[in-house]
Length: 81
Image (cartoon, rainbow, N blue to C red; front, top):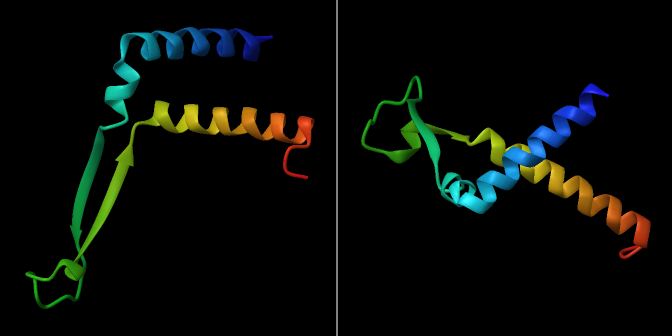
């Protein structure tokens, strides 16, 4: 029961983000952290660094949910089997 309420609220939030265009802007937003790799002697080489990229969590949740919906539809309609 609680899951159903959460899903309905999440659907309202996602719909608002799509209609307002906020969701499209957030696709472009990332946080990138550059870390220096220990033991590398030459700091001028790109291989001396490691990138860590954080994407928007709402986008990850939406992608997973949409993927699950499509997967279920493909199995139900036997499109690729």
